[in-house]
Image (cartoon, rainbow, N blue to C red; front, top):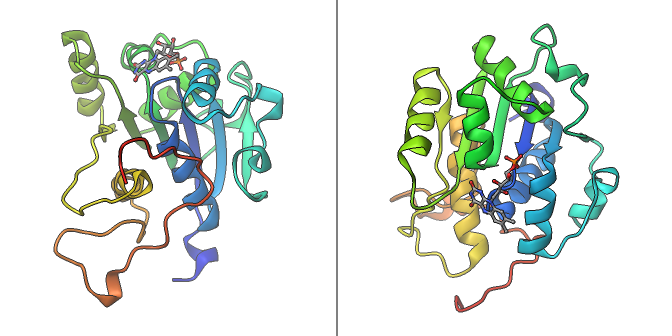
Length: 223
Ligand SMILES: Cc1cc2nc3c(=O)[nH]c(=O)nc-3n(C[C@H](O)[C@H](O)[C@H](O)COP(=O)(O)O)c2cc1C
């Protein structure tokens, strides 16, 4: 695959639900594939980033070298208050947007058209312009309001890719679980990838790309 030909412009929203390893790994894989990435972390996302991965950053310190083990020139970060960013308007084009992870608060704002920050506005633009919008919600259990909001967005054309990794690829590390989810997200975005093992495709040609070494996942009880 010619990387230049397949390079796409995407907006990535990161909101304050649990699941920061999914966000960082997705951004890392897409950056390595050469995509043009425009990333907005909500304030709550920065708090969860600190709680989950011990990465404490303010908006002004959001730089690729502070999140990964190298700097990526194709990632640009935006303050969620910057409602004048280029992707806040439908007249500027891009492939679409992914929100990973998506909190129930942001889900509700977007589903009901009452967003107040750049992340919500960018999603609203994707809906009105009928661009691809992939939403990775994370909450459990789900209330009727959460379920209704997901159904509403799905009916509007958004793809709901719930953060529910499978275990049928027999993960032995948390990174393998994260990569399974990242593969499903990329598939929904229509982006070719070989991040994880696919069902019944374990042979020499389908060995997944090596798992991330940059996300400091603590392995807890999983060996
Ligand atoms: C450590 C931590 C984990 C959280 N996990 C979730 C979650 O899994 N799902 C969710 O909907 N909200 C979760 N929240 C709550 C959201 O962060 C909160 O509703 C926030 O207002 C969302 O704002 P945002 O949508 O602008 O990012 C979590 C908060 C913290 C501090």
